[in-house]
Picture: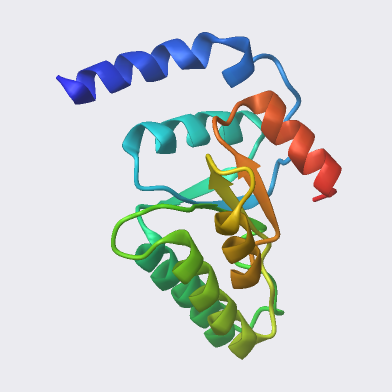
Length: 163
């Protein structure tokens, strides 16, 4: 029942202008890792980002994200291509099971140091201020993007961040 309702909601959201109105694909060719444990929010992020031309990968928690980034960095090292970022940026949920966004960001930063790279990580959180934001920044988050997400907010954010 819940899955069916989520699918219906997803279909409705795709029709709303703020979730997918006519826009250029300004981020065509970019690759993003979305780290989110909620299935519906994964679908919303995917719908929004794909409208912008982004290639998206999903991780369900911080531990999965760490494994995904570590593997991508290791794969790049073993290939003979010049070093580059495996993801142009990461959208990281703050509260997740297994490993939260703060711990995952810290561990990803440690892993990146081994390879001499730095992937911009954006926290996606309902928090807009307070100790949570400070913890995220201390962990290595570049910026906090507040929920709920919509295409206008993401487009404005990314253009102001000049990615």
